[in-house]
Structures are given as C-alpha cells and as structure tokens.
Length: 256
Image (tube, rainbow, N blue to C red; front, side, top):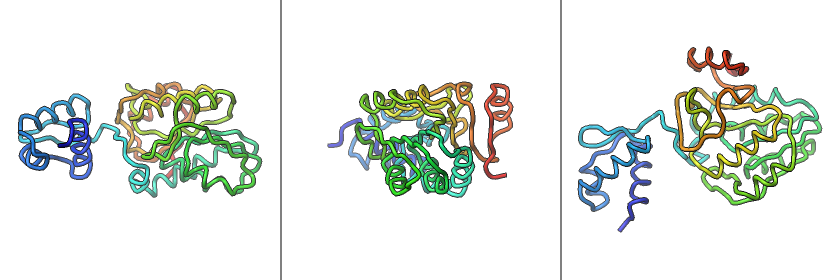
C-alpha cells in the first residue's frame, strides 16, 4: 500500500504530465476511496499546486514545481539558449562569478569559452563537469549533499564554504519570479544556499525565461528589488517591466 505522502507526489506527477486528474480514476488507480482522493486534492489545493474542479482537479500552472533538471532543459530550449548567451556577455575577463544550478545557467557554461582568468564557483555537478577542461577557469565546487533532481549540491557545508569568499557576480537560476512573492524555489536547502550566494556577490543577476513570471514556490530566496539585473526574453509582461524599472532593476531582453 502506498503511503499518503507518496500517493500525493504521484498525483502531482500526473497533474504535471496530463494537466488534470479525475477522482474516480485516481481512486481505482491507488485502490483507495473517493473520500481519500478528495482529501488528497484538497491538500494539494491548499499547497497551491492544484485547483479543484468538478469531479477532480487541474494543474495550477502558476505554481513552480520541483521538476528534474533534464525535464526543465527541454522546456523553452531556444529561449534559454538566448538568455544564457546574453548573460555570458556580462562576464568580463578576470571576474569571479557564481553559477547557480539550473537549466539556463547550465547553458551559460559553454558560453564562457574565450573568457580569460575567470574564477567560477558552482553548486552544479553538470556545470562543474562542463568547465573542468576550460584552462582559463579556476573552478571551485561547493561541498555538500546531492540533490539528484537538479544535479546540485546543498547543505550547511556548502553554505559555510560559500561564505568564505566574495564574488563579482552571481547568476541565479529561477523557479518562480513574482512581484509580490519574490524569487522562490521549491527546495528549502537549495533556497538557503541561494541566499548565501546572494550575500557574497556584489551583483545578483537573475536568469529567467518568461514562463517563470507570476509563479511562486515554497521557499523565498530574494525580494525582487534586491537583485541588480534580470536577463529574460521578450515575452516579459509590461507590468513586470514597469515594476522592475521602478525598483531600479536593469532588465536585459535576450531575444531582441
């Protein structure tokens, strides 16, 4: 028998794949009563990831889910590539930078070829692998526990390691970007490390395609007004452009 937590995780996975679920179908699938499934859906609605509908529930598309990195990488691939290229142009020879884990920052690593005398700190295993053969990069990798979904490292050891240094720029991956809720991510441990990254960087640069706007997740990283730059695409809503300009955040549109 699948426990309640696991059943709800599987329902979320199904919502992400199919966009909606039915009570009768889930009841038969998990061999539990319709009362139990309705209780599951009520709880998922409270957490923000589902919207109840007659006979079932629909995916709340404004909620940022903790998807595996390889799945994220398949979404908006061309736009993310343009954003990665524009973000890499902000890196100068001799810079000390942090590359956060994420599908867009992962593409940035390839764009650093030709830059000279860089120091790069990362918590992403795939980024570290990509940069390991770049002789112009003094590569640093934080220690800690591995999050397999994001191929990233996190934890108290990673935060302690990060706080020993100071960097010119942080390129911060984004799961949710909302004017009220701020920059958010689903995982508490990763959010804690991201906050440490922000504290040790002179300039915080968020990289986010426009699908992230209006989305929120469980864990707050930074208020919107506390970043210096945002690299995004031309689908950014006008309301976000006006608000960010008012807050003094420099917005770079990558695909213009």
